[in-house]
Image (cartoon, rainbow, N blue to C red; front, top):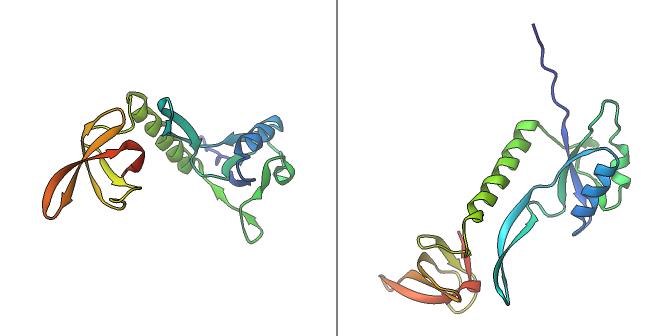
Length: 171
């Protein structure tokens, strides 16, 4: 009869603004196991669209003790770290299945973008985030380097409208 020991909990760590990478590096140097989920997103540059990784939960990461008897006390004095998220005096924790689900989501999202050469594809649902048509949503029908043709429902009819790509957000 084998009994499986419960896995060590993951603690939710609050970092200083835009210091997640520093916090991760310093926590790893101290021997903690750290998980900082990243999202891959499109970014418009002068040279065109590029993929950029950013933190999924800005200012938050996940940390757990990697060896038996390791204390969580040094975490709060680690460079880049503000402290652990707590409920009263009890540190917030997540179990392994929750972290696995977040890991899987980040991996799937990155995989979807790998095969794309441009942030919008025909058939994507988009929202207009800038310009005179801000707030309207539609479906991408044609993609060009600078403009994207979106089918918008205007006055009860579907109308193709060319919109600068940087004014669109995928929904």
